[in-house]
Structure formats: structure tokens, C-alpha cells
Image (cartoon, rainbow, N blue to C red):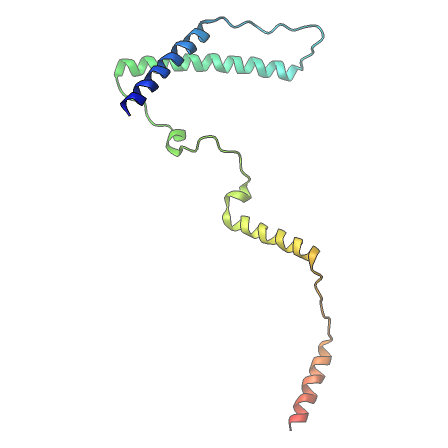
Length: 140
């Protein structure tokens, strides 16, 4: 088991050196060719993401400096406490089990109506009253 841990540490060190080398390489800006057209939305979105990335880098460096100076561990975040990872977005109906099963039952009924013909007997109420009346007379 100790051998595995040592192998893992060596791999981490190798990956760290590779990632540092990649970060040190300059990034070439995208050149716009005359044949390719970009919408104003896509250009604005790209500028916004570059701006946000720059701000995140500044914030990260400030956080690291603070944690190194004080020597304290950083506080746990909401995302860490929930530990959900990458979960797909779910509809509101799917989150509520009662509503989910209610809709499931409704859809099953719709499917069943396509398979089975439901016979609805429409009988006059007056007929049943007469039937019961004569049935009672026979017993006497």
C-alpha cells in the first residue's frame, strides 16, 4: 500500500510540473479571418468571460496571501458541504416525489385509455327506481 501511495505522489508531482509548464506558455490571441463573421453577442460574451477570469485570478491570489499570512484553514463553502458534484438540472416536478408520482399515474392512465376501451353505461335513474319498486313488490 505504501508503494501505491509513493507512486501516486510521483504522478502528482509530474502532473504539477506539466501544468506549470503549460501555464507559462503564452496564449496566442484568436485572429479573425475575413471569411468568418462573429455576432456582437458572441464577442461581448468572450470579453465578459475574459474579464471574469482576470478577476478570479486576482481574488485567488489575494485569498492565498491571506491564508499564508494568518496560517488558518479556509472556511467550508456551501458547495463543499452539499458535495453534490456535477448533477444535471432537474425540473421542479421531479424534485417533489408526490407530484412526480401524480403525473406518472396521469400519464399511465392516458396510455391505458389508448389500449383499453372503457364502457360507460348511461342508465336512467328512473329505471332503477322502478326496478327496485317491483322487486320489493314481488317479495311481499
